[in-house]
Length: 358
Image (cartoon, rainbow, N blue to C red):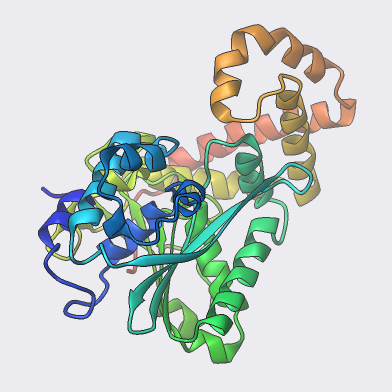
């Protein structure tokens, strides 16, 4: 069975003029959003065909979630006729502690005024994960506003036909950005691909028809804040949380291998999270998550990796900060924990025959 690296190699002779963009191409461009374009732009690289040097390939993927696989993808793209002439433009990246925002986007030019706007998912930054959790109690988060602004500016400056893609939080940003476009610009968006992105799709038939949300069989991230089942399920050869890795998604021909539905664990997770969050008012969610984030900050970590590495040393400081927290927030946290345990029990009793429409 192939993955998207093998797909990039096997379709290498077909340009986008001879074979239009597929969902696997969309996933490749979603993954490509994680490459280090700050480095590439500083060294005046402009298109994938220029990235044939193995040292450059290593440099632009060393901070990705899966560097060796990302390295192989860059290598395949640099040699494939399908990708080597694809240029990038308008790379934007920012991480702000004050507004709790982690945002990055880039546009790929396929030729003939056809573009792919790719929104980066969550990175290793602590503030990025905090912004993800902020989605559970805020109507919008800064990255969503940035995504909408970026897309409208891009489409105004460079008229043409557009595809929007994103992995993880990036998929959520792609869907949100489409919804915020003026109607005249929405007509120029051919399709949106959300790969294991959290959140439900818009309840607007004309927009929903142009959105494909795909999740792996044991989806966890893609089930967050998802109350509907209008998504497709793909086969991943990884287990549990590692199915979030797009490189583990299996390809058959020009598409990902489909499964009829998510497995029992994913369905259980979706039911449990939906039931649990329904018991918590937005202000309570905010109090608990903000307090947890404040506790982690006392260790001076800026990434999830730094939190894990410093846990033995910082645990006493975390506990001290927890004990000094507002008594009301501590009580809310205890109540939320009990509600979660109750949701766990209730979800086990629920039927396990959810079906997916797409």
